[in-house]
Amino acid sequence: AMKAHLLATQATTGHESGSWSFDHHHSGHPGGRLCCTSLAVLTLEVYYRYLPLYQSTGDPWEEFPD
Image (cartoon, rainbow, N blue to C red):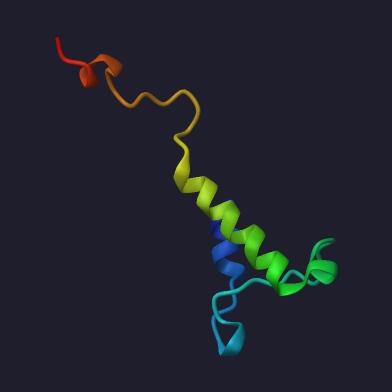
């Protein structure tokens, strides 16, 4: 849900292309485009960095052969 929202609200034209600006949000006005873009990028990075909770990556002992 968050990924879809962020990708849908990213600016795609002009000098603002690739950035976010949430003027209606509490951090949009004081932080500006830089703050909004930074928070959006960090949110998307966390999505790819960590495994979902309780997901197994396989047998942990496979890394340590006898």
